[in-house]
Amino acid sequence: MKIRVFPMVGIIAILISTATAIPGIATFYTQYVPSACYGNQSQGVMVAAASDTFWNGGAACGKYYSVRCTREHNVTVKIVDHCPDCSSTIDLSREAFAKIAKPMAGIVIDIDYHQ
Image 1 (cartoon, rainbow, N blue to C red):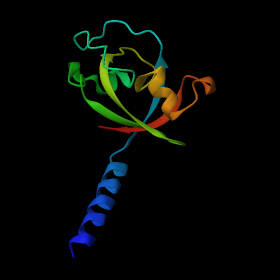
Image 2: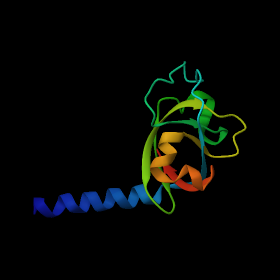
Image 3: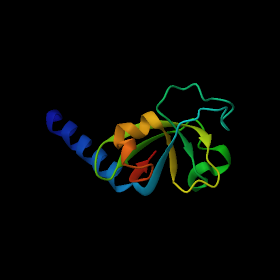
């Protein structure tokens, strides 16, 4: 009985995760400067800047988001900056962008994301 419960929990978690994904657009940046999240730019390369869409007065700082290219892979990034007036939903580091799409393909891709 216990063996059957664990797979069901996993399936339910995947369904909830997929159901709560929000469509958006991702871009990438290459200049790493002091950030709006208390200068917290030295968090490695899997980082991103939040657009006004979910910046929420800085409440997004330090939160992790799973970002999935609607055609390919996903990456988890930490929000370390604000991207006011961004044309995209989330501005990924070039390294994070490369995990889900080829930077040579362009700087804008369609994504799904969730916290």
